Each structure stands twice: as structure tokens, then as C-alpha cells.
Image (tube, rainbow, N blue to C red; front, side, top):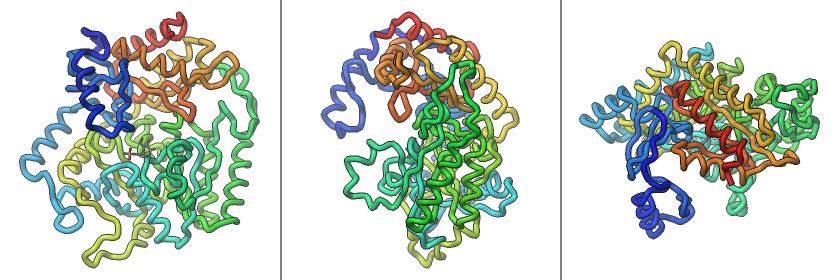
Amino acid sequence: MLPEIVTAIPGPRSRDLSLALSKYENRNITYLASHFPVFWEKASGVNVWDVDGNRFLDLSAGFAVAAHGHTHPSIRAAMIDQSAKLIHAMGDVHPAENKLLLCRKLSQITFERWGLGTGKTTLCNSGFEAVEVAIKTSMLHSGKPGAIGFTGGYHGSGYGALEVIGIRWFREPFQQQLRDFATLIPYPNCYRCPFGRLEGYRLDGSRFPNCASSCLTAIEDQISQAIRQRPIGCIVVEPCLGRGGEVVPPLDFLRMLRQLCDTYKILLVFDEIYTGFNRTGALFASDQFGVYPDLLCLGKGLTTGFPLAACIGRAEIMDAWPRSTGEALHTTTFLGNPVGCAAALASIELHLESGVGKRVQILGRRLRDRIKEMALPAIGHVRGLGLMIGAELVKKDGLPDPDLALRTVLAGLQDGLLFLGGGQDGNVLSFTPPFCIEVDEIDYTCAKIYEYLRFGSVS
Ligand SMILES: Cc1ncc(COP(=O)(O)O)c(C=O)c1O
């Protein structure tokens, strides 16, 4: 359904709640201002209702989580059913049966389907924890402490994840507590070439020079140099940047990484927390690019809404972890929570239904094309795969325009459209709607975005 706004935004109740929250929550967590946020009360499909009765169209799927739509009936039913029986078990001691069902299912839909044997899983509570399990696995498997990450990459905010993160400001305040075991390498970005080889290109693609992906040679050289300088155990990479601004790398990038990893006996870790589970129009981005990792991190759309993530690896690699003799080396109180496992199993069933990826591709193409067709000077680049689409906003001189992005996000909120700014410079409008979004909702959103950017109604 299209948005329906019945109060000022934020409404009176949201404002009251903001004021109260400012007293009790760490002030670094929720951005509280006169124009932000709205407090959510309920959600269904692509819609969210706030505590003042306003109906929003959610173009973010709540950080790309609500893949099948908010509060999906079959996921909700699975969670209700499970919570009537067992809400919590002893994950690494006396587990619930559905922990096995989920680990087996994850193996079947990843490494087994790719013909790479059984996949073994560590279930986690959060995406960053899954990335940290991957980094720990690399240490145990190779004995090499070093890692490679990429500029613009986002892997979460735990200290292990911060080592490989490529968005600097998340690390900076904590730099002195980090060990710096990772080397950061530029992520290929055809619009803003990190090697200055491209000037950018017009929306019709006419200025996209044939650089023969020369960035890949430069990246390969930098990685090889890093490997000579320190013992590297793994390369951690997002197949497409998510929070880094929906950057899709050149086709051969992941293949080149796979070859490097094979040559130097390094583990390839795909962080598919954002790109996984049909977000790019294929079950995994690995399928999209035909390149498969040694370790795979999943989260977000895994459950469509319950905090659960996973690190899955080829069995012979995961078996670098010693067999438990009563204490797990990496564990958490809520590991393999039965309600989370039930949500994940129900969500995966929906992901495996035929036509999901196709639908995501078709709707994503429409969203991308509609934004491209605007042909506005403020929109420097439109990109993405499936239903993860980014529109990079630029100033007249082509530099990133984060202020315009923020004003556009706020204008959208006033009109009942929920989307966020992303990218390393905060100048990318990021759209990751639930897969159940309809064409008229996409067209409505684009008409509004056009209005904001064309007529300068964003001031
Ligand atoms: C690619 C990627 N990795 C890791 C994370 C961290 O996940 P979480 O916020 O669940 O810890 C995110 C979150 O946005 C992500 O996009």
C-alpha cells in the first residue's frame, strides 16, 4: 500500500517517545532530532505504521532484513508455534532439534548445492559475530593471523569485524585498541575508480571507457604485496558493497580473488550478510558471479526479522576447530535459539520458492531504470543488483553530495517513504525494499524522488 500520513512527521507520540528515550538510551545509538525518528508500532509486507497512525512504505526492508515483507504470515506462524513449545535451549550443550535442521538446510543450499561437499555452520546472534567466526576459523585453519579487507566494506562493529572494515570512521575512535592484523585494499568501483583510471560515465553509459578492468591488475598487485609482507590467512569481501553504497564490482573481481586464494592457500570469505538470500536476484551473490567462497557469512534475510546469523564453511576447513570436550571455544548464551531457527527455516522455505529471484530481478530493474530515466544532474550514478539499488548524489562538480542525500531522506520520511543514505560519503540513496513491493509502489517512490531532486523541493 502507498503511504498515508495523518500527522506532522514525527507525530506527537513519536516526539514524546524521543524525549523519553534521550534520557535512558546511550546517546550514540538512536539519532534523535526534531525531524527524526518515527517510532514503529507495527508492520506488514512493505508497510510500517508508526505510533501516531501514519502508514509508511518501507524501501529499506529494515536494513535489508525483511526480505519477504514484514511480519510474514508463515514466518510468524513458525515463530509462534515454536515459542509455544520452547523459546530457549542450551545451544552448545543441550540444543533444540531445529538447530540441526537449520545447520543441515544451510549446508544443502550452499556448499552441497555448489558441489563442494558438506558445509558446517556456527550459528551466531549477529552478522558481525559471523564475520568474527570466519576470521577465527582462518586463524585456526592456517595459523596465519593476517587478513585482507576492502575499502568501503562493512562487516559490523565488533572488534574483529572492525579489523577488516573499510569504512574508516567506525574504527577511528577505537584504533588504539585494535591489533591491525588486516591490510585494506581498494574495492573496485567503476564510477569512482580508486586508481583514478576513469572519470566516471554518463547515465547512458556513453563515457564508460574500455579500461579492460585494469583496476583488477592493480588490486592483484596490492594483494600479492600484502601477502609478501605479512602472513595472510583470509580475504574478507562483500561480493557487492551493501552499506558501502551498492557498488557492483567488475565481473572478474571475485574470480581473481578466488584464483589468488587458491594460489596462496588463503581462505576466501564472502560476507553475504547483505547480498545473501535473493537480495541480488540470485539465492546468493556467489551464484550470481559463479564464484564460491571457503567461508560464507549470512544474516539479515536469513530469518527475515529475527536476530540470527551464520558462518558456514566447507567441512574440511571448519574442522580446523577442535572437537568440543565440554567447552566451545566460540559460543554465546543464545546460540541456535529455537525461535530464531524456526524463523530461519520458514524464511529459507520462502527463499527457495520458484520465481523469487526472477521477481527480485524484474522489480530491481524497474527501480533502477526509473531512477536512471530521471537523467538529473544531481544523480551521478545509479547501480546495484536485484533489489539493492543505490543512487549516488553529486554536486555540480561531481563531488559527493551527502547533504542532498540527507535532505532527500528527510523529505521522503515526510511523505511516508522510508529509505536511508549510504555509501562511504553518505551520498548514496539506498533502496533495499521487501521483495513483495509492487510496481505502482516503485513508480510512486520514483515520482517522489524526481520531485525532490528535480524541483528542488528538498531544501
Ligand atoms: C555485509 C555486512 N556484514 C556484516 C554486517 C553486520 O551485521 P550485524 O549488524 O547484524 O552485526 C552488516 C550489517 O549491515 C553487513 O551489511
